[in-house]
Image 1 (cartoon, rainbow, N blue to C red):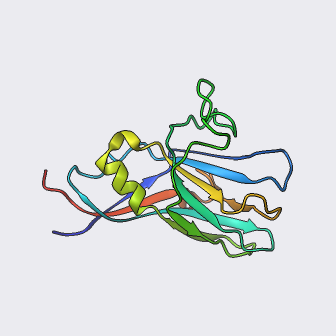
Image 2: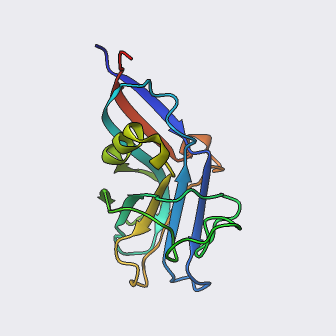
Length: 173
């Protein structure tokens, strides 16, 4: 059986800060619209969230990836709410355990950063109702330098749109 791949481009994203202070922590949520591109019964071999960093403060800022446990509305999401109709259970988003940590390199040049999302995507394929999107957040959100700049779904370069690259063995069902 040949390995296949699907690239899901983020259909929704949103970055926000807890406060208006430039030093406040920031988080990002990404939505991909489900896994309909992956045939039922497929075996996920790997999955990676790919984002483009545009710069950071002088220190190495590690970010961690989580699965969201509640869906969000991109145009309405805030630190306190997933949408106008639904508050997060805890401020900053409802999410599961850390599955991947990646440290952006401190620089001012654009560079691609990948986060391993294999375990999350396998869970989504096994239980599609659990697919609510992804969250990127800082490992240490009390650090003043905690901020890197990443492109969103409307970057100046369309190749920099956040994406989820999924490699799989197609199912027979």
